[in-house]
Every structure is written in structure tokens, then in C-alpha cells.
Image (tube, rainbow, N blue to C red; front, side, top):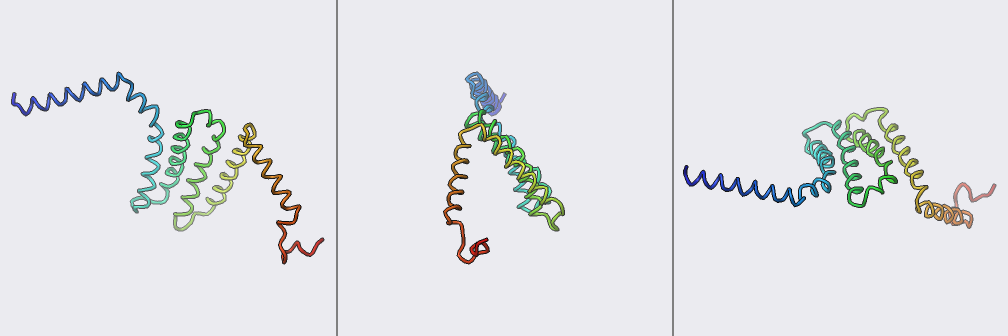
Length: 169
């Protein structure tokens, strides 16, 4: 054997040993548990890049928007703890709304019927998100916000001087 082949075989053996050692130390398990949402996020971003580089039609934005939102959601839950998912699960529906809206916005001519569906799906997710927050402390913030807004309107701060409602009943 030549010394060049010996170097290649030696380099391969060293790399194999490092991979085995890192595996036994749990490095790959840690990376897999931590970075798996990138498997969903990166294809979504690549689909967006393909469209904006004029290499694909606007129809790729539908799965691109869904995958991007899902990847971000799963990454957030993976970092902060999966208990958060019980409150932010309506973002799964937001992903569909984002994909539909992006497709509607960038497709020419604009497809009929897509925008109303995107709006309905988005509003549905907002309503579901509100109901998921009913079991948290965020409901106190929402209640306080509603009380402050009501007091502001009762005190007359919301009335305009020349508006439709300034003449009285």
C-alpha cells in the first residue's frame, strides 16, 4: 500500500472513532432532540426561496407557509417546553391560513375564493387561541383590557368631535 492510501484509511478510522465517541457521549441524541424542528422549518424556507428566486410558481407558498409556521411553532415549544403547546396549538391552524394568504397574495391572476377561506381560517384560529387562553392567567389581562376600553369609551375619550355620533341620539 502506498502512504497516500494509509493516510486516507487512517483519517477514516479517526473520523469513525470520533463519531462513535460523540454518539456514546449523547451528542447526536442531544442534537436530534434539540434541532429536529429544523427538519420542518428549512424545507418551508427553501420553498419560499425557490419562489422568490423565480424558480417555482406561487403554489409552493402554500406548503411553504405551513411548514415555516409549524417549524417555528415546534421550535418555540421545543425550546420553552412542550407544556406551552397546550396553549398555542391554534397556531397549527394559523399555518394553513398563512399558506393560503401567501398563495393568494403572490399568485397572478389572483385566485378567487382563496382570500375569504384564508380569513375564515385565520379568524377561527384566533377564536380558538382565545379559548385556549381561558385556562391561563392571560384571561385576566384580556378582562382588564376590556374594562379599560369600556371605561375609555364611557368617559367620552372615544368620541370624535365631528363624527356621526357627536350629535346625540
